Structures are given as C-alpha cells and as structure tokens.
Length: 119
Image 1: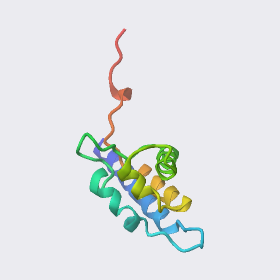
Image 2: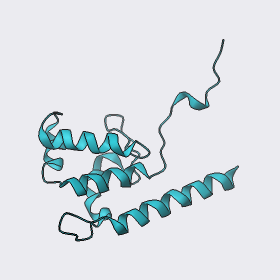
Image 3: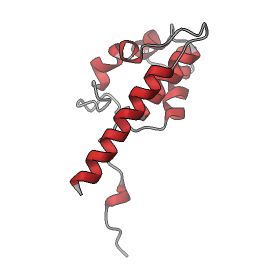
Image 4: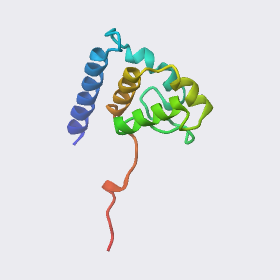
C-alpha cells in the first residue's frame, strides 16, 4: 500500500514540475511558478497544506476553484485585504499557473470518502 502512495506522490510531483516548466505568460515568457508561489507559502505552506486553521489548504483543491477565487480577490468581488493585495498584480496566466501548481500537490484535506457510512 505504501508503494501505491509513493507512486502517486511521485506522479503528482512530476506533473507539477512538468507544468511549471511549460507555463508561459501573455508575452510567451516562461513563468517561474516556484518564485511566483513564494508569497503564498507564508500562509498556505510550502506544500500547500497550511498548518494554521485560519488559512485554507490549497493543495489538492480543484484548479478552477482556486483560479476563480484568485480572480475574485483580484477584482474585489471577494473581500480580503491581504489576498486582494497579492492577487491584484497577477495576470490570468499567472493565476492559471498558480492554481494548477497547488491543485497538483498532494493534499492533506479530509473528506468523508474514506469514512464508513452507517445505516
């Protein structure tokens, strides 16, 4: 069972690195996703799994959800002065790259899919 988890982790890591190498901005310059993600790491963790409860875990979330949230922070439709400040200068390509980067990370989110359901 551990080997299955290791293979899945390696596959996610490879996918994230492969995507990071291929993302480009509007002027077709490569986006260095690891540099772009540094400000996010302060609250959301280097692996996207924040340890403080007040910060959402980004790892494993749907990329389109993360992208939509960043666009809403950028436009002001979603209110948070800290996130608004970080999202404001991001281009659509950078938002897409960040959302895909964190979505590809292994998540520590807990859902009920592995819990036994009673009658």
